[in-house]
Image (cartoon, rainbow, N blue to C red; front, side, top):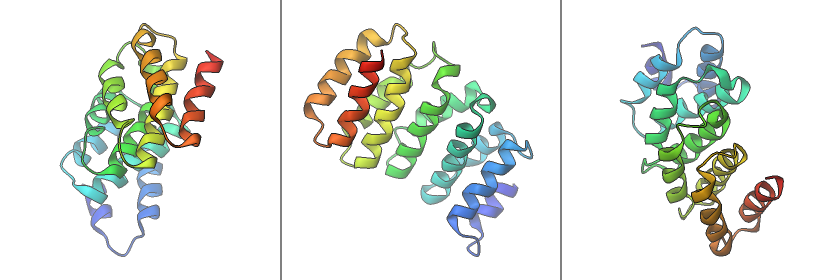
Length: 170
């Protein structure tokens, strides 16, 4: 597949790879399902770059996301690689409003990532969890007390502020 060829080309910088794949998705040169199919078999940096491209594309146009995208990204939240965790969380944050009744599993994985040692993973989880909170669904019964607990243990003020601002806007 063309994505795999691009990702394996060591002459191209990672940022350019991300931008190219994102552009392909937005222009519909490749479908999100094709990217997901390819990314599912990738490891480490190549998988993270694919998910980052998906994050860029869904930030520009969230409506391109499919239910299979949400399911794939929800699963990648549990990956060992921190960059995959944080890019996946950002995708969830971008598309949560499209699937308000399909976010329970994503929320559970994001809550786990809210305890990760990496600051960027925790920041990205906060972003996504707050996007879910803003939807005002039945998940808020679980999410609000969880966010309260996170705020009490989170050492980074910048991350706590994300949660506090989302609660204030509720």
